[in-house]
Amino acid sequence: MKRIHPAGLLSLLAVVALPLTACGTESTDVSSGSDGDARIMSVTAGDDSCEVSKAEAPAGTLRFNVHNAGDKVNEFYLVGEDGLQIVAEVENIGPGANSQLVVNAPAGSYFTACKPGMVGTSIRADFEVTASDEKVEISADEKEQIALAQKNYAAYVQDQSAQLLEKTTEFVQLYKDGKDDEARALYPVARTHWERIETVAESFGTLDPKMDAREADLQPGEKWTGWHRIEKDLWPQKAEDYTALTTAERATYADDLLANTTTLDGKIAALSYPVDAIARGSSGLLEEVATGKVTGEEEIWSETDLWDFQANVDGAKVAFAGVKPLVEAKDPALASTLQQRFDALQELLDAQRDGEGFRKYGELDKETVKELADAVNALSEPLSRLAGVVVP
Image (cartoon, rainbow, N blue to C red; front, side, top):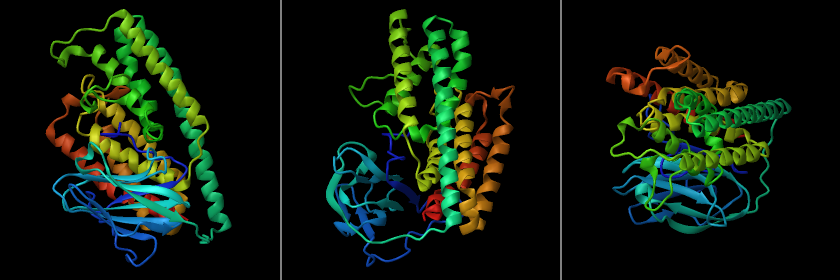
């Protein structure tokens, strides 16, 4: 689960967030074009301010160059007219750091917003996207490659969602029946299908926190439900003064998880996937690894983080593979770098396998954790440039 709140990755708009100061050997240049370009905006995010250089731009590919001038970690958003839908966002902008948000936005009314500290109420301003006659020429070969990537990725996500529903149905029944050993064994297997499509699930607003919120993510007064609530009940050894759930409570949480999984499966069946959103999904899954799995914070009770780690990498690789022909045509060096770094990360993960699964995260020494983190960082930076390359 994305920390703090979910992002609407696979909205009807094409989205890509490019961190300027990402870890890795390369750096992302956010200076292409100037603020004199009608579609390029500079944003200065402070601890109590959010200054955007323009209040409107013509429809098309918009670039927001964001600088955090404050002392708190910040976020920047483009929000829909309803004030609720996060159309696009860039998170975790450290003090003094720069990031770029690129979004293909049709005409309409929006809000720009910063969130100092990444909590609480955002600082918002009106932003208008006006009609434009700009047309993008796409070759017949590129159109064919894009269509194939969209078709294949949609089939992959639907297959993973169907398997998630099947495994979740089995898991919750075992849990309700008190067959804890069998439920514990199935827990990381079922969650593999969730983690492979996690960024898609995050696009459905409240479904993600209902299903995947960690205890540490909860806001005051927020009810805790989903996978990790059940996880704690199955692995209570590390919890202080924990009271096991009753049979009735188990049934309530299990039925709620299954109902939300069923809802998710239905919503996924109706989705379509813009090609740059597929690429953004690949990058987003690596972000999930960096912010939760490689730190051991995701599965704090079961310590099955490496299962999640592998599943996020699986989903990222599938998304990359789908758009790889486009990247090879436009930026072959980037395609080669990404493939090499995916392979290097997979080699490190394979070394942590234990039978059909993985070692518990608590068994990893500091050197191994650092190697994994370094490999994730080395892959994350070039992967963050993927969507920008595939945008027609």
